[in-house]
Length: 360
Image (cartoon, rainbow, N blue to C red; front, top):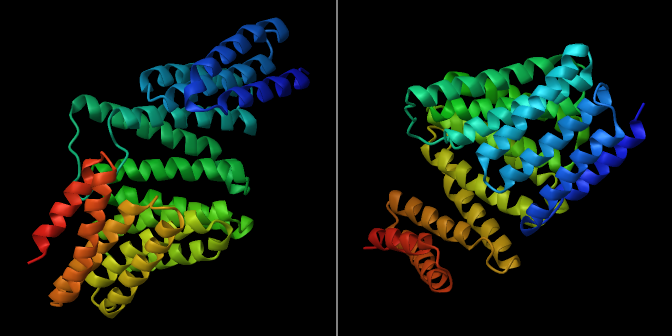
């Protein structure tokens, strides 16, 4: 019942949210109009009404998050969760209801994570104050509950639930990594990569190749932070192999990812006890790949290229080959100075200054 009305509503929602950034205010008005129209077309005491409300609240939240208005987005996701909970209470075994609830929890947790700045793992763990820690625990509990709700369908191999489970686990891994809880971060990241591998083996397409590679790169970072260089190396090698299988499908996107991951791999080789001899070739391959993509895209990845010149130059200096190292650094300095003249971004001037200090 009301299937056609729901389908029409979903089409209208998709049309509204697939807008350009400067069209977001109009899209929000369209969604508000759809919400008002909903009560005229579908009775409030039906499951269809709740399903529609979940979609409408989610789409509004997504638009506000897109604009960087996290508090507003959070309010919509909270309402989304309330409607989703009503559906789940009616039938806790319904996979669709469990999935909607899991997505709502995932989006609530994401807003909390953004609010306490737990998005990027760095070598220096963060210390949270009491309020931040309370929010941290609230986000963690939502991610875990979302995973629990999706577990039955994920175990059956349902791609939608497997993908969302991986998303939750990767966010959990990041949060744990931010605060230096590497044990739990590693466990979550490994589980996510295992799911992504299964999806990639089944789908064997470019999006899943990129997905598993990106998540492997995150896993490798955790291994590095735990001083497990060999596992970091193995993981990055697997990530690059996965990307290479579909590089032809999207040469720019995959080419720059391969170059970046090769840079990370070269750094691992340099610190490895058994594979140091692979470092030089890997650094140079990374530089060549990044330069090729940058040349192909009219300097779209010039920052990557400057950073690559800097990394290669520093590598040669660390190996006692100062003349070779300074050659790469001088190339990086010239490119950084040129980019600084053509851009108002201070990063180019900062990189040029860093490299000047390394050149004797």
